Amino acid sequence: MGRVEREERILERIRATPPGFVRTYGDVSPGAPRVAGAVLSACHDESLPWHRIVRADGTLAKGGRQRALLDAEGVPFRGSRVDMRIARVPDQP
DNA sequence: CCAGTGACCAAGG
DNA sequence: TCCTTGGCCACTG
Image (tube, rainbow, N blue to C red; front, side, top):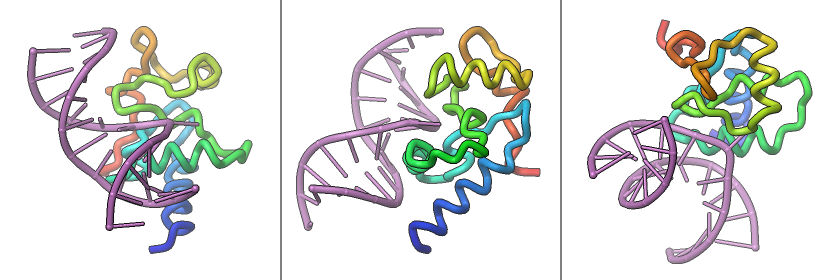
């Protein structure tokens, strides 16, 4: 698989994350979570819901800006981190 | 080929 | 809960 195809697969999963929910870097890029971060940091597409991608423990990589967007969608928090038990999109149906 | 780097992860203390 | 550690993997120089 080429670089672009892997990126597309990652972007596709991000796009498939519904408002009010989140997925982890590991969810969108199994086995290589850091790549998801690299892709996001490189991609400037406004339509991409980058804020719905959070760390496995529910903490945010982008701070207050990301927090505000998630709050606006009604994503549940426990203190400063997303309540993953409720907000995480199940990958295994 | 090797070393450094990241919007990471899981396990331990 | 907060830190540290060791481990990932792709990419870059």
